[in-house]
Length: 297
Image (cartoon, rainbow, N blue to C red; front, side, top):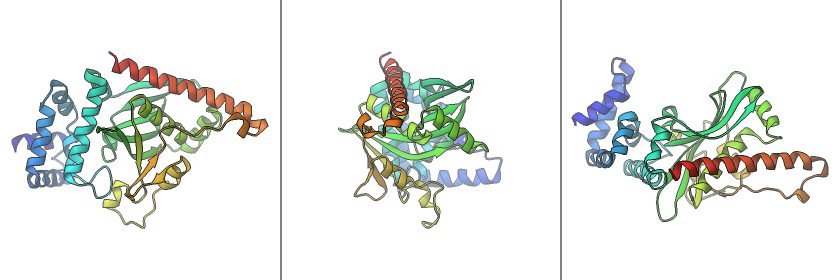
């Protein structure tokens, strides 16, 4: 129990009444599921790598105690999500997994836009712990523009689950996104971050991609079901070729993005599309190269 209290004190600032209340709820839920929490803690003690991870990021334990990841997730499901995600990454990254969590980021692709650094990175973002365990992020001068938050299920057929897609709240968001879309030859930023996530999935040998639906979004544990999301996840997944699964909480997305042939494109737009496709090919090659470099070290 002392160990769980110590973790809680790392997560919550108990000097603040609201945080103290959250700490009490965390401890209560941990005690009600003590064996599951104990098993998860033992998992993080099994290797020096995991010990370092939990010491650096105690939020993994909190994730198991709250209704995160998707609507109506169960305690044991959340524990399994956390374990399987790291088991998968260890099988691919070995010790280099540390770079994504301890060092905060791994750069997958970089470019320049209006003399500012534009890049795609992979990292764990504590602020997005409710939706997943890792993010693929499009950044401009180190400011997050779009991100996909996900986790990976290690099984016979490895699956990637997208828990959320989020855009920037910058006051100039529309102007920034419009400019970046033009920079990418008419390719929208949210499409770009999904494309990058698909590239990560393919490089890691992911067999299927699932994404939470509007009704499957984790926050539907807490808010009215008739309250609309700012952006319809369903509409975007369907636009990307997704199909709703037997479990209404998830869509299945094609791992490969559909690409029009040049013959399908209107003549006056073909040059624009050629440049777009060249850009996407270069992004995919960079992501593959940078991930494989880490995996093979």
